[in-house]
Length: 288
Image (cartoon, rainbow, N blue to C red):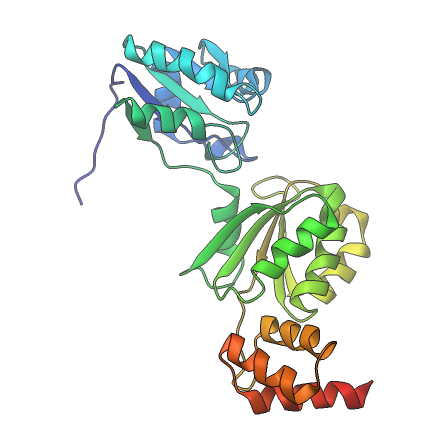
């Protein structure tokens, strides 16, 4: 394979530069070269990035670009690029734009016909997925779930039958509530991997049915500290299993209609067998 070595920085170019997510040794040589040579570094937190640059003895001009000022400051950076300056975009950790600022700036650059050069590098979601033991040929990155339980449950309900592996970020203080909601919405047997403090000193990767994982996390406070990635196994339908949404529809219709009619309507709506829904509803009635 022909290798491409481009140590020169192009004028009027925005470089997307990933930074380490914990272990400083994970920065690439190309990233160091770009950060050294560009005219300006646009950073999510200039103090945080300043320490990173100091560690590698890089003296660079810093420009603050974060979630709260990006749309306003994008014009300033676009102007600088149009005047021929080269700019590196970095976030506090990992690849910019992946749950970090940069989307509006990159979109504006593309619209203005400015060159955008992405560098490969650290990303917590991909790093955790690679070690999870769950299928990685097809996956769905969902970022952070909503902070409040209702929103979180609604979001989980929307992907309950998603067959691809799901990737979520979660914060320390919401981890237990999030796992509890996963038990409620996905079922206690859905396999979930908790990847914590990836690349850092206290890195741990532990997978189990989510009901067991919740108990495991509850048993030790240290297991819910640090940066978290949750890798969730995709939905696997059993041969005779009825879709969750069809069962919800049946339950709603049963409240107003006889079981036979409710099963027929739910079957027509979701394209499943009427007899299977009827048997399920009958079993529920007998259980109650």
